[in-house]
Image (cartoon, rainbow, N blue to C red):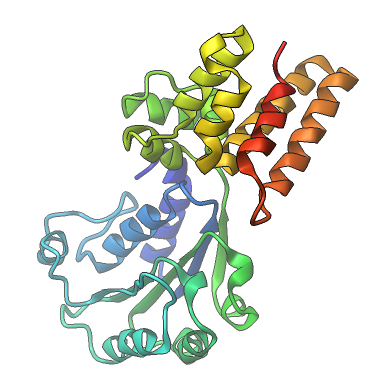
Amino acid sequence: MYPWFNDVFHSFTSRYLANKLHHALLLSGASGIGKYRLAQELGNALLCKTPTQQGACETCSSCLLRVAGNHPDLYILESEKQLGVDKIREGIAKLSGTAQMSGNKVLLIPNADTMTEAAANALLKTLEEPTANTYLVLITSSITKLMPTILSRCEKHALPLPSLALSLNYLRECGVEDASEALLAAYGNAPLRAEAALKGEEEFSFRTFNDDFQALLAGDADRQAHRLAKKWQDNAVLASQWCMQKAHGDYMASQQPSDYSRYAQCVDVVKTLQHPGVNRSMVLFGLLKLFQR
């Protein structure tokens, strides 16, 4: 379990052991904080024959089946695009019978916000009147995309971003030696996003951006604004957002009108780049010129 979820996880398991856990939970929060992992660990505890506040025992027959990927009472509804009504009905049908392991049945919906209207409507009755020993865990990074009727039938848990200290410690333990507040902020302060981007060796990461940006500030002739504008044009929106982040940091440190003006211009550039058909290289060139000294 990710350390920033220890408290909420122990709250869930304690309530379950006391027979007070709601049958339908909705976990919402920013992408990249580990909501799915939290849901999985909770599902593991619900299926376990001898769970504790710490979670599943990992040794009972139910846990061994789950680890092997063959648990008959665990259902995960996923789709590459939208989650349609047929998929939801398939999951509901599996929940309608008796648990094959004589315990609980667990249904996880990792991207609940991708449900079509018909799919959401099909799920309503199960959310209202689930079969015995049934738990549903819905997960979303976009809670506003869920229908009000779905929201009203779930116990909602808004999961915050982890603290800076926990996030940086996690990244360093994962081998990200240059983990910093700026690097974390570049990925929305979501540690798993930062880890995936940096370990995935993406062609355009905050590391490569920052190296080039520092060279720009230093006046490196090989990395002047026009060259970087061309180099970054395929990632123009992300590059401009990171420029905006740096400009905001400069203004917060100096409180100077000139730094605020540059930040405001960065905000405008980010908006401009959202429009199709704009010359991204030209727009980026104008933005980068603002930072040259």
